[in-house]
Length: 68
Image (tube, rainbow, N blue to C red):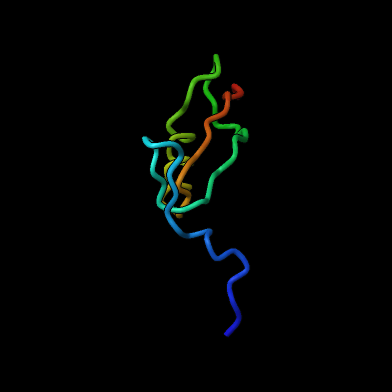
């Protein structure tokens, strides 16, 4: 069996003393097209972000929402 390419990817890490993360997977900011007028978060965007977290991402970085 070969060694994993990124052996620490799924290991816990902390950012400073106050932000422990369960792994090192981070979703970078990106536009989904689900934003409400005025740049507000929509339920569809919240559901999208929740699915990323349930899928294993330890941290998501919010981005400004573009209105539809």
